[in-house]
Length: 256
Image (cartoon, rainbow, N blue to C red; front, top):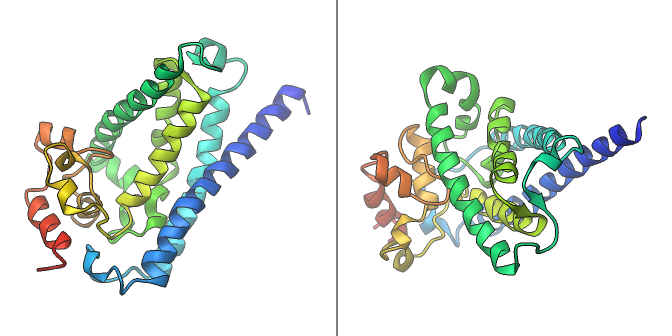
């Protein structure tokens, strides 16, 4: 095997393995604590009272593992020696440590808008049936649903990395922090339990956080609440489910 081809194969395997491990590290403990170990302890925070079935968990894990194979392919397409030199990728702290911190915030903001726009587009009836329906098989999602995508949607979701690498100066440290935060927040969104406290979500800034309840309602009703990290774009474009605040209050007050 040619050395460069061999290196690309190693990169593919490495990314697929790392993304799988990242998924297991975040989704695994969340599933064990909320679904197996102490479901009664957190029952008052359950968004939909019924629990998914074992077949749902298996489906979600199966599609997620397929997603990670796609993510590996996307990494090879982006970080190969023919393409990467034309990007804004850099190593070290050539732009300073503070820029590294700032670039993480910028990456999250860009991803928040990217996700909203692509997510809303995938809800077009023609695209939904082909691309996004697989993810919505989880009407009552578990943490395992975080990356349960059709391969075409997996390519769309993977698109944020080349967009960042070619759209702004970003280094390895910033990208790793971004990917870790993305995974954590994605698992929270599909947790099925509301983990954000009322004092936070009722504050001036906290009310724009995309809660577990917010995304769970999207899975249940198939419309509205298209955001990822924040509700900014849903509020701006009028796509927030009108029953969201009432439902959030009910969940946070233990169904009262």
